[in-house]
Figure (cartoon, rainbow, N blue to C red):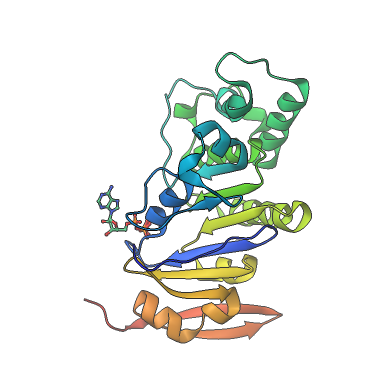
Length: 245
Ligand SMILES: Nc1ncnc2c1ncn2[C@@H]1O[C@H](COP(=O)(O)OP(=O)(O)OP(=O)(O)O)[C@@H](O)[C@H]1O
């Protein structure tokens, strides 16, 4: 990653977009402190991330990785209860309000009826929704999500993004989401950051960043950008790939 200077603000939904291997997940990992930048620094609430403990970070920031691993025998309910770990520690007492928060997170992702189900017995999309519930249940002011709608059917893609949009607009959360679908980025994000080969190609309001030139430069594909019913749509011209290696 090179020459990256970004600020993510409360009450803004930022889409991180770019081709495979452009550095989206690497940037996410720097933002959460799982990888250290070779130069420069990451600030959380104005303080260097590197000077904060894992627990301090976890109280402020929830992270949904691109792929999540955990013991298969864990149930959905047990997974979501891990959300309290940053506050209670390993043997802390779970408050009634926390339990209600966990149930609410499960209801939100449509898994309230599957709290007792082992993760190994979920479909790919259900499993993804369980991990989304874990991130939501942490109730942090900052949410970083790497491809949250991956594996989700159409209804849940929109349900999850509607919910994230509400959390940003209604509660002023800071949201950074990796999205591959530019139409979802255009529909939901305030801002977009377009990465290419570890650098920021463009950043700013999503509709300004995601124009035909950016799509061509960022993804090597020609696309039409059209306005329809108040929405901006990106229509790739599949047969006219440009600049493909
Ligand atoms: N642990 C690692 N060690 C070395 N190189 C890595 C590591 N993880 C990723 N990379 C490399 O860094 C570059 C960016 O990878 P990254 O996973 O951040 O891309 P991405 O934009 O998230 O891609 P995708 O859309 O495929 O998920 C790639 O060239 C990748 O091969």
